[in-house]
Length: 371
Image (cartoon, rainbow, N blue to C red; front, top):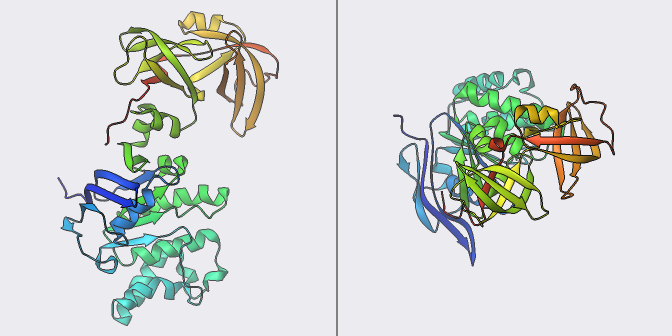
């Protein structure tokens, strides 16, 4: 098995009484796209800065390419970093920006010219070598910043929310470009973001970070469909979140009654017993809506009577907000625009339901153990 490009062992970092990174151990495989996803203040930027060498851990160790980084300054680590605001030099041309690191390293002029030309061609910027930075679009600036980092052939490319300053349409475009660039170069990317869409689209593996620790590390599909903690279930993707108490446990499925009185069933994650308080999560896309109960009865799926409270148009889908008739619980359901129910109206009486195997619940307090 190939040596991982990044190995972190029991990393911790405090700022006074605040624990920013709490005893983290993980590896990043060679040539992979690894994202660290979490809310503001969870410790992800502190972690990235320790990998880069800008901060020293209070305890633990970092190995990059199999080499211990203890005491190694940032400029001697085999890493480069792309920041949210890119930090391009506005007084330099595109070519000069990309050549900057090579020049600082004393690389021969002919070699710099060759490597800069090849790199700009690989990021589709070959015709822009003499342009000023202020003549570039936001996406072009992103490509120049990445080219400037990759031309130095780092073991790791660290990216600290690099798409955060872009507008929505450009962010969507750059997600595709970043994924393609990483695959083309084969360089290991460690990517920091608070945007779950970026992490899910781009990554081979994602670490969901919360309060200085990793709640779960897995593929985007594992995080989305098999969350291990309530935080991951609630943070990754949209969800209907319900609090309740368990009334029955049977072969991995639990029956529960929500605080509002809605009776439902869900798949238990971890140990759950009768009487436990639980957090339950049902994704909008696993639920469906119909005008008659027969649709659900024939399939053996639990269902509920409800009234449509609102319809929210969102391009390819609509969000249908319903209120269950007995408990008055509000529930969000994703409905394709092209479906046979595209003519639903606010105030209409409907039926909704979902397969309990596609809902999850956790005993309150579940997920306290560190990854």
